[in-house]
Length: 100
Image: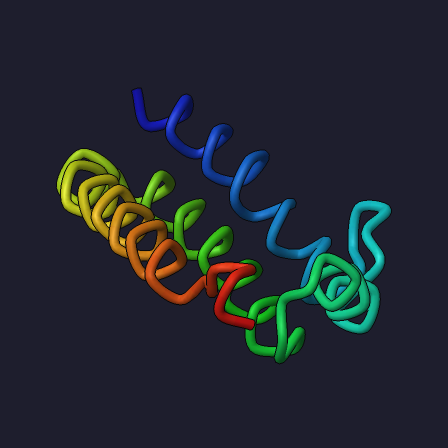
């Protein structure tokens, strides 16, 4: 069981985060990730790139340590709630073409 947690943690979270932050395993590094996020319209790109890379490294570390069963439900519900609130805020932030 521990070997499976180690391999999944290192391969999924560790390598993905290392690609984004350090450029390891064929990644573009932090500057490339910043450029990607900014091309998608996420500003500031550096903050989003750091958050994405650290989240992946943290998820891999949690899987390696066997903590994913403790955090997964709360993190999933937090992400769902933030997505819902963001969608609602986006609806109210848009202006009607008639008022512009």
